Amino acid sequence: MTFYLINNMPDTELPYTNKEDDGRVKILPSQHTEIKLAYQELNSYRKVAELYGVTKNVIRFICNPEQLKEYNERRKKREPHLRYYNTEKRREYMRTYRAKKRKHKLLKSQQ
Image (cartoon, rainbow, N blue to C red; front, top):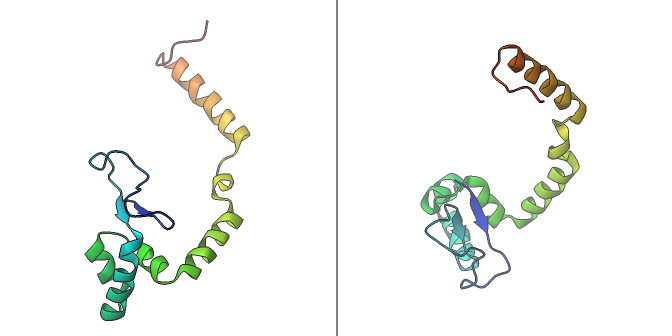
C-alpha cells in the first residue's frame, strides 16, 4: 500500500479523479495535527501508523518534516535510478538470451 502526502492543497482538491480506483491511502493536511497529537499521546510511530493505515515512515515524516527533507536530499545524492542499470551490460544479456531462445525455437527469428 502506498501513501500520498498532500502538503499544499486544500482538502477538497485531491490530485486524483476516481476515489474508488485509487488504492493509495491519503493523508490530508487537516489530519496532520491529529496525527501529531496521536503521536504525542501514544508515543509510537507504529501504533499511529496502524490507526491511519499507513507506514510508520509516513507518520515520522509528518511529525518531523525536517527528516523528510534530509531523506529526500540523501536519496537525490544516491541516484538510485543509476545504481543498477547499465545499458551495455543489459544489451549483452539480451543478445545472449535471445540467441538461446532462437536455439530452442522459442523466439521467432528476425527476417
